[in-house]
Image (cartoon, rainbow, N blue to C red; front, side, top):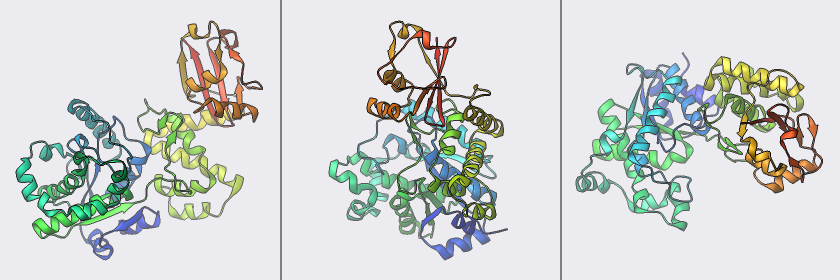
Length: 408
């Protein structure tokens, strides 16, 4: 069997690693206990987290043992990494509820039966720490100067970093120490923005227990221009079908830019690299079938083959202007709101099809909005109940984005 390091490297996951040669040898010779942390700051994972889930799936397929760490303790503090402001403080009850939902999601993709992998929660050891003892035993091993130099703190120092958040790195380092002591966890993996926090844990274990452990980070899901992917008009692209429908999820990936399709295929599908190398030779319109297949494969992993098939068929039917519309995203609006008419731009905003009225005006000038198949020429029109066929109105934005407005 191939070394999973080579698999991850070939598909473009790996960004930074503490000890490359030792890690390759470790993967070759041992069944490695490794962990990735997920703070339950929301009640669902989003597609940005799914890079981490894919890494865990590759690792488990290669025989290694994932520890999915739900951050029931660290979520009470909040990771300042990548944030310009302090995270919203959640109640312990909400954190517990979110953690339970995230755990259930992870169980869909990983075998967490305790033997082949398992879920842990850092609230187990963080919630009841003795503050003075923790400062003496753990805090004394951290250099404030080095912590302040870390990338995860730099941008926050300009706007103000709370002492609460300043503790996050220490807590994450302590997580690694506890997991190593309890479960012989030898590796922490995470997104590239977690490098400073991961190094903190590696060094803490070396200082406290004189053991060598390892850290590895992988790329974040970004466009070719370096912007984070997974943002829609409604916010994050969630893996919970109640928050982002499978059809919307499929359409997001079907519509990625040409420059991003191969990267998404490598990172978010299990399509063999031999096939992907052939795909890399294509460009322009020849990439459309590749986008379709990539979107199908990603949706299949996240939502199952049936939902992926329905999304694919719905997208094809809608693009052709016919067929089953049952998977089309729907927005329900009270009939009464149309008694006096609703300005079209207000309706587009309510349907999350535009971010601003200025964007709506530009789209309409460019013939980018259709109502039930007819191009809209005037952005100042009012939509009344007479414009609905039965109780529905189909809005098309551009060529590929559809919403059905349902009167209730």
